[in-house]
Length: 120
Image (cartoon, rainbow, N blue to C red):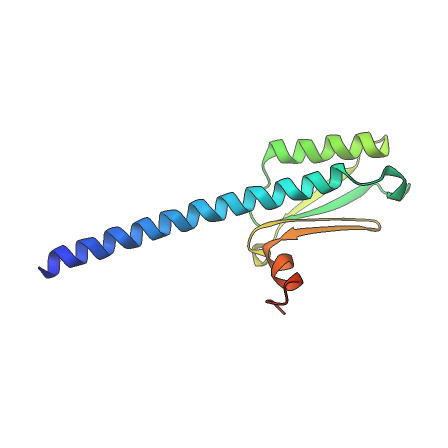
């Protein structure tokens, strides 16, 4: 009986872990997509003409597709190539932070928790 209970517990633990990983990946994708969408909706007039580079802070390695999308969007808005300095920071837990001269777009899990007053 104990062996069967242990197998059931292990099975449930594996299922919970899989669900957690899947939900974290969905959250990650949604946060990155919403940040890219916010960049798309930036008013080109609000972007500093001296802007030449932006910092991209990401929890995981930023997908090449998302990096290219950001570069293309920024190039269209600024009419020049904007250099992206990409770095990883696991403390943001999920999502992305995009910073540049006069621009800060925080779509990280840490930032969302701060907005909600749940994280100091």
